[in-house]
Image 1 (cartoon, rainbow over the protein chains, first blue to last red):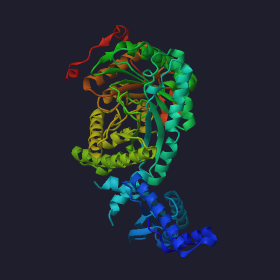
Image 2: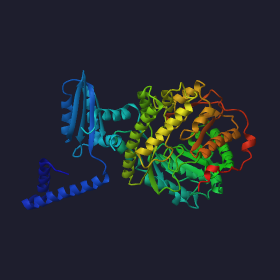
Image 3: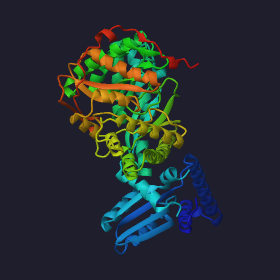
Image 4: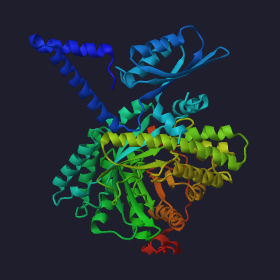
Length: 143
Length: 453
């Protein structure tokens, strides 16, 4: 798992506050690197557990076109710390369609929460949004 | 973009519009180590073992449901045929085991538990006799327990003594559950050539050659196939077979993925995928509608059997290519009460028991969820079961009878269970007597085709 700079800073701050007066740059460094290692070890175990899983979802949105659809969806995705890997979008007459491949591996939310947020957006914008795990598409359409 | 627009839309259409779902994830649990001379101890062992392995079953399935956005309609449990570990028990003690199964099923939050079963195609032990005689009591005193008895096989022939017992058991069960339209019979299946890894309740059980615990998955999706058939338009039959195969291939692959994920969560071995078109009373989730979309005016029209044969064969072929773990029934189910199209065909007078019997020669199971008049003699039911077994034995395939002699009802009445079991119009059955034939008893010897060694 890759840690962002912000996450590392947070870890360091926690380490400093826990170490209290004993905190020295070396000690903080060793505590933080240990925490990162542990997190990575956990990650490896998890990866072995679901070796076929990619951690990506496919998000499909369609409905009557109106301003702000992509903005609303992508904003939510960035709030969840998800990464957009691919995006294809077309306007057919008045109809808006979009397919997006999103990596949710580093998401702070689990898939269910993301689905719920998306269905909220769908209701607000009066469009349809479907989110499904990429594994399903791979199983069905790729050998 | 690694997937094109059509592919993405196809998957969404299947899951969101066409009712493609995982019909069941069934956890098979061996009860062979639960035997004990003391029935109370055995009962406790059964309860504890089902809870030990099954307590997280519903939770895990729901997690996978959420992860993939594909619904898993039923979460169920099957156990070793109870006649095997508890062969020393009497009738009352077997009913105690059924109540332990019922209680465990309720505790882990599942609607049905199957495996109150016996395999008596060649002959029966004293324990098996007791177990069969306990069925009416067990099914009328429990809510969730399902029972099945295998009375014939290609290798062993047809055990007419067992069939005679079972026809009495069916009548008795109908009577004991008469307050609820004889619902006990909806949970009781008589089999020929029963598969040992079938995940579909009521006929499921955990076969004797199965491991300690296993997870099997049953996939359905008549709606998906219906739309594929409709889309083919007026293409010829080869094109139609191709369209069905492609669709089934895709849903089998998705189903296996889900099954393996649930098995992995449980940390138990994955067993088989059973790709069976199992209808529900929901609109569009009907085998009858597929047959009609293929071109017959209504189910029961000449040509229905051929259409069903092609459908069944295409399902099997596609399943076989999509997964190395295909098992169970794998084909098309043709229950009457669970399929709105079938119900309508019966009500219109287009579908008779005789035509259904012909259709069972080419579908994956048999006479399923058919209501007949309550005063039908047990020997007539025995004749019906024997006919069905003959089809299975000679064609080396699974056949089954789940018939409801609805207590106190006559032709034209309706039995209504609601939910997945649906409703069945009481059908007429010939009043000619089979008594002198079936009462001979004994066993119809195994056919030529059994001598394959």
